[in-house]
Amino acid sequence: MQSVSRITATTALDADRKELGQRVADQVFDAMRWTQVSSGVIQDVSSPDQWRHRGSEDVEADLAYLEIHRPAILAALSEYLANPSLGTRELDWLFLNLLTYAEYIATVTEIRKKLLGMDKFAKSLHPPRSEHVPSISELASRPWRTTFCAAATGLSFLIHPIVAIGVGAASVYWYMTRRQGTEQVNSVLSAMFRTYAAFNTVDLSWSHVARSLEDSRRDGAVWDASLFRLAEVRQSAA
Image 1 (cartoon, rainbow, N blue to C red):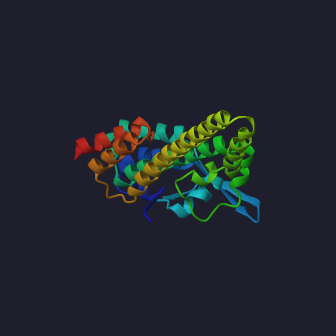
Image 2 (spheres, rainbow, N blue to C red):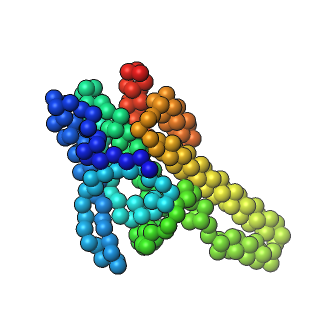
Image 3 (cartoon, rainbow, N blue to C red):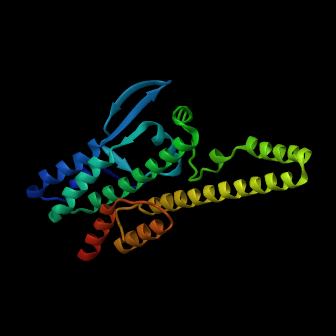
C-alpha cells in the first residue's frame, strides 16, 4: 500500500522550502487522531506520523478509532496551493488521498447515524467488522416492516376488498420508494469508494484524477472544491 510520512512528504524539497513545507505536512498529520484500544480500554490517543492508502479491511476500524479534522486539512491545502514551490508528488497524493477518504468516512458516518440513531450507531462501531462494504442494504433492511404491511393488507380484507387494494397499493409504493432510495445511496457510496480506491499511488495522472472526481460527482458524490482546484493546477503545470 502506498504511504507517506511526515518526513517523506517533504524529502523532495530543498532547504529554502523545507521549513514551510514541513509546517504544511505537520498541519495535515496533526489534523488526525488515532485512538489505540486494547481489551476495550483506551491506551493512547495521538496523531499518526504516517498515512497509508486504506483498503476495505481498514474502513470499519477507522470509523471507530480514526478522527480526521477536515477543516484543518483544507486550510493546509489552501496554504499549499498558495505556494506553488512547495509542490511534491508526496504532498499532492497525501492531500488527494486523505481528503477523499475523509469525505467518504464522513458520508458513511452520517448515513449510519440517520439509519440507526446515535446510540445504536455508537454501539455498532465496537468491535469493528473485519471487512467494509460500501452499501446500506443490510442496515436499511427491516423485515418486520414487510411483515407488518402484509398483515395490514390481510386484515383490511376483513373490512372490505377495496380497502385491502388501497392498503396493498400503499405498501407496494412504500416498498418501491424505500428500495429506490437505498439503491441511490448505495450508488453514491460505491462511486465514492471506487474513486478513492483509484488514488492509490503517488504516480498520479491528474487528467484521470479530474475525470474520476467529476464522474463520481455526477453519481452524487460530494467533494470539496479544493480537490478540483488541486487537479486543475497540476494539469495546467503538466
